[in-house]
Image 1 (cartoon, rainbow over the protein chains, first blue to last red):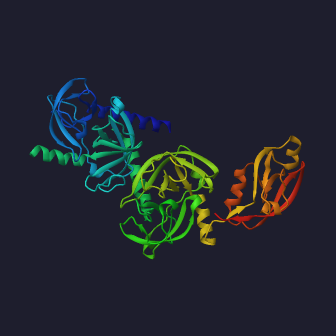
Image 2 (cartoon, helix red, strand yellow):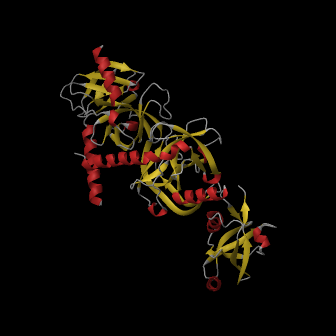
Image 3 (cartoon, rainbow over the protein chains, first blue to last red):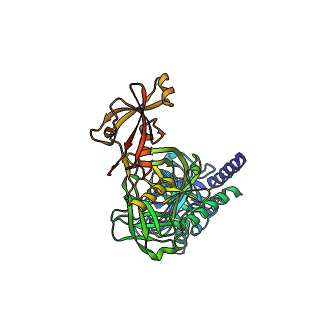
Length: 196
Length: 303
């Protein structure tokens, strides 16, 4: 029995380690800060639009380098922003298929809640869609999760049990309920942003 | 690779999918619908009283996306429970696999399910606390106190608390005690459903007395056959206890041959069995240190 728990625990640690390699910190003037995800090894970084309200941005990479970043595209409506830093061969995250997510599925969030860098929380998928309780503006699609998000988690990755990014952590609607932008919405945003 | 983690996640998803077939949407109030669970094959559905504010124009949403009408069979407000019967079209509804009290183990993995919209939703946690017999602030008496740490997402009240065996431990409610995720366990549901079907209400027994537990002196413990009893601090004039001859200062030992060690014991006996209200049952008590026997006709309290 304890072997089972040990294995489970070791696997969680391993997933967290992998994800934290693709987690960045975004600093936004003297006060604002949030998280971001290394989406591609050529320096493309994804985060929330509300994390990058100003233009003077710096990104702290997992290896400690601090680089200036410029905004490639920003969609306040869906709360997504794409940034570029001048670096290559970065440890990009593995992006999953958020449409395959089901209620009850195990998920993790990593970010910098209250400024604590690289902190992890775990929980399950509550559900996803346009018309979930609390999120009924009818237009935006949300991925609701039963886990702890706090200020500083915004823009960070939500990953499944295999460590694949399935969403960008965006809001908290209660002490133990959070909302993420589904990875599929981020992919659609990128296709539109990069083609224009 | 995260083999075990994936397997755990997959098992949770499968459990949600399977038990979700018994979870319905209950449309009985202006704001967000609540959830309910299929109790039996004949279309009975259990849900929370606070989620069903009207008696007419009730509808339940089925897992296949259809919606059928429903009627109130009965309400037990102090248990936050309402029993519905879904329309004839819903005969395909299959009851949940209800788990008994021996499955209520602290630390067990649990899922809370809900269906406030078209789809089943889920949160996850463990059983936090289980006690036998609980007198709620609402005045309702529960067979067990069952608390978990599942998040009660909006519209989850009335939905099932599910264990690792894909069985339902009871229905969740966030309204009994603010801020706590509590579950009305299967045994309490069964007791209430049976009483509602038989009498149209849950009868609550009433004695018209107030008391507090006292430890008996050593010599009297031997005479009484138990260590504690209920010292009567109040006897309502003309009430059932008064009419049976009980006096202020008597120490009540047993009711219907069940020992009374606390007011909880007494309330459990009075409210736990719908057949006891109105019945005449034996009592044992101590008066001036001497054991006595008598009979009391239990009254019925109207809630």
